[in-house]
Length: 114
Image (tube, one colour):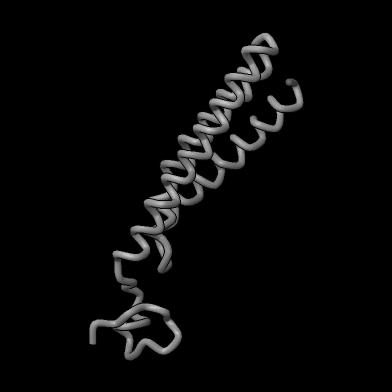
């Protein structure tokens, strides 16, 4: 359980770093999408950290159950955040001066209304 706890704590750290980086993104065509995914990454980091701590300090039987619940919860949270980011990417037009508004749709992959 010690190894699983340390692995989960490292995964929590990487998810937190990714979430904080995505929160600070303000420029670029994918900034709104990355900002939409950031809260779910931070929540997943908290869940993974809780699972890692539980794996380190709980009795083995309880630790395994808590570890599984936290990992499944974190994966579901990341999945929900990714779904939200994908919906945002599909529904919001890109406004960086390229693509449909920038003089043509050559190679952008969007369906233009004109």
